[in-house]
Length: 354
Image 1 (spheres, rainbow, N blue to C red):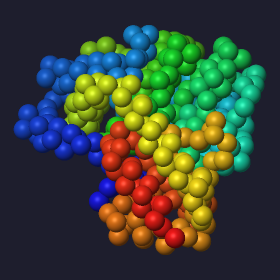
Image 2 (tube, helix red, strand yellow; image 1 turned 90 degrees about the horizontal axis):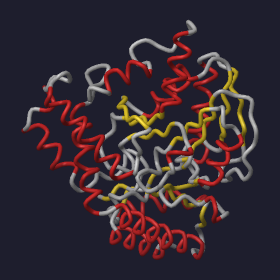
Image 3 (cartoon, helix red, strand yellow; image 1 turned 180 degrees about the horizontal axis):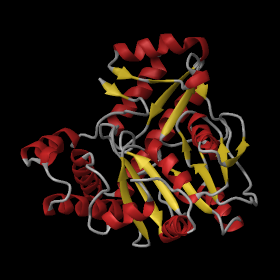
Image 4 (cartoon, rainbow, N blue to C red; image 1 turned 90 degrees about the vertical axis):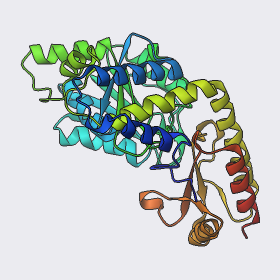
C-alpha cells in the first residue's frame, strides 16, 4: 500500500532502517543530558541547516508537534495582539489558539481554495501565516509572505510550513519563525515538531519576561535557547525521532534538494493536468498561482467514495477531504517519499477511473 494521505503520510524509504539503527545504538534509553545525545542533536541540526539553507541567525528547537508551537508562539511573543491569515482549517486553528490564550487575535479570512493577494499593514505584535494550507491545498506565494514583513517590520512573522518543507526554499532573512512537523514532507512517524526562530523572537520573549509577563513555564524560548546552546532540550525528548530526522535529512542532502524539488514539481504537474482533463474530477484550487505542489486536492463530489475505494483496490490510500470537505474531496500528498513511478501509476489509475 502506498499512502498518499497528507499526514501521517508515506514513510521515507530509509526511515525504517534508521529507526532500527536507533534501537541498536540504545537511543531510546539514552540520557538527554549525555554527550551521545548532544552529538545526535548537533548532527540533526547540521543536516537540517544543510538541507533547508537555514542560516546561523536562526535557532532550531525540537517540540512534540507543530500544534504545540502555536501555543508557544503566542505565549512567548504576544502581549496583546496577533493577526492570522486564515484560508483553511489549520490556519484557523492557530487563530483560535490565540483567542483561547486570551489575546486580541485578528482574523483575515478568505474562502477555502483561495489565497491572499496583497500584503496589508497591521497593528499587531505577531503575524501568523500558513504557507501551505493542508486542508485546502492552497500554497501562498513567497512574495506575499515576504511582503507582510516589509509592510510590518515591527511584527514577528511566523510561518507554518508543516506540509511544504522540505520542498519550499525560504529566504529565512525575511521571516522570523518557521515551523513544521515530521510526519508529512519528511516521511517520519508523528511525534516531533521543529521550531526555527531568529534572534528577534528570542529578544521579544526575554523582553516580555523581564517586564513580568508570563510566557509559559518549562517551554519558554529563553529556556529552549539555554538548552539548545548545549545541544540539549528542555525535557526528555522524542530522541528516536530526532535521530531519525537527522539521518533522513542527511539522506535528502545526499539525494540533492534541487532534485527533490524538481521531482516534486514534475509529480504535481502530471496530477494537476490529469485532474483538469478528467471528466468527473477537477482541482479544488482553480488559480494556478495558489495550487500547492505538495498537497493536491481533487474535487470529486459524489464520486468521492467510489474513487477512494477504486484506488484502495489498486494499493493506493488517498487522503480524505478535511472537515466540511470530507465527502466531496480527496487529498493527495506529494512528498519526497512518493516516487515518480508511484505518482505516474496514481495518475494512470485516476485516468482509468470512470
